[in-house]
Amino acid sequence: MKKRHTEEQILGILKEADQGKPVADVLREHGIAAPTFYRWKSKYSGMEPNQLRQLRELERENAQLKRLVADLSLDVRMLKDVNAKNW
Image (cartoon, rainbow, N blue to C red; front, side):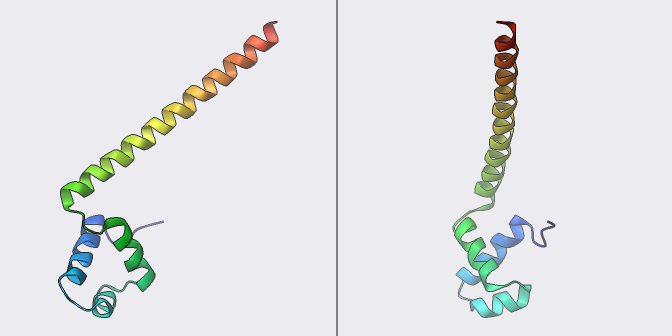
């Protein structure tokens, strides 16, 4: 799924609404739906660009760790299967 807006753009859109611009105007101007806006607001509300970079880095690191755990779990399972066949 291709995203139409970058996370930096999302922060800008949310900041417009926080500065007092009516939400309906912000939605119309940027061509987004209300559920999308409120989903973004729940995820990114109050974030600064540096916090957003930290969040992205943590998500990337978390994905790498999950892959590592999955690979190690698979290795352990294979070793147990091999060991069970030898006895």
